[in-house]
Length: 168
Image (cartoon, rainbow, N blue to C red):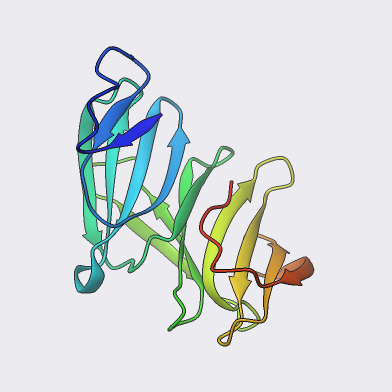
C-alpha cells in the first residue's frame, strides 16, 4: 500500500509508505519492487522504484515516454510495458527494459485502431495486452485485447462514463 506525502497515520504500519508527491499516473509491482509512474509534463515520464517496505531504490527518467498513464510487467520476459496517451494524442505502448542501471526503450508499439487516453494491463497467461482507450470525442470506451505486436485480437465497447483512470 502506498500513501501520498503529507499522510502521517501510517507510521506504525509496515505495509504503508509515502511516495514522492507529483502527478502520479500508473503503478505496478514486479518481483519485490513497486514502480510508480509520474507525468512530468514537458520533461517526459518518470518512474520511481521502491522496495516493498517503502525504501526508495532509484529513479528512472525523465524518459522520452510522455504520460506513463499505466504500466505492467510481462512475467515471461521481465519487460515493462507502459501506455502513453492522453485526450490530445493517440495511445502507444513502450516496451522497456529496466533491468540495468539505464532503462532502454526497446520498441514502440502503435496501432491506428487504438484510441486516446490508453491504459494497459498485461495478460501473462495468454501473453497479450489489454488496453482501454476512448474516442477523441468521448462517447464510449474500447477494451482491446492485442497481441504483443499491437494486433487487435478481440475488442468490445462500453458507454463512456468518464475518463478511465486505472487498469489491472
